[in-house]
Length: 230
Ligand code: ADP
Image (cartoon, rainbow, N blue to C red; front, side, top):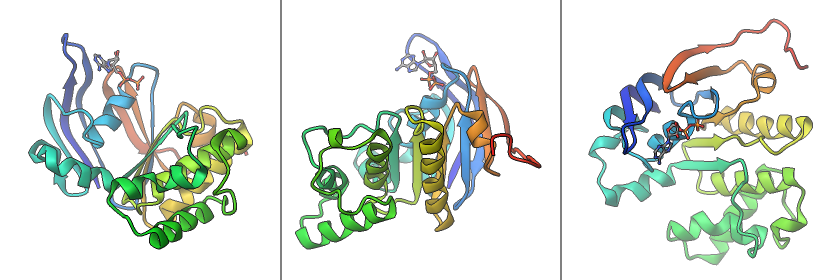
């Protein structure tokens, strides 16, 4: 699903954010991406979503070689990717329904009945059915993040990319949100999550990609006999 081969990303000014990074995430896998601030995590995510292009090396996402992808093909690639952010980036003036419907409208779905069916299905998956008419400020931070996840999955993407999705949540809500990602993964969605929370991610038997100053140090599963934070 995601293949990086000798990827280098140099920003203008010569700063190398990623240095010769190679890894492979298979379709249906779930993995975490960790590393200190400035290690290159967001850059790696931006390359996957084709928000940035590599300076050299090859990035392949869901069979598309991004070097060969024309500008006109980028929206179709993005529709295969659901993105989730730490601050969820909900539109405050729009209802929960409108926030979740947004990717469908951008994708050109104009059928109101089908839009409502898909929005309700996405809200159901994150346990928020019935909250359609509320506005983001009327929800708890955990609920806001779940609306962000519903918006990310409403188009049924093949890949979910989450940038510190539990960064603003307490431990119980963080575990709940991670559980949702696992549920999507269990039905075949590939999931890559940026997280600093080693205690939380070591509870899951998923691969951990560790970036340090642009270098990928490990990409192996952590095997823990007893979860440290159980
Ligand atoms: P992380 O997400 O791990 O905090 P980033 O990918 O945001 O790291 O940044 C990696 C490095 O690239 C940092 O040194 C950062 O300052 C630099 N960087 C990120 N974006 C840009 C940009 N648009 N222009 C120049 N340098 C950037």
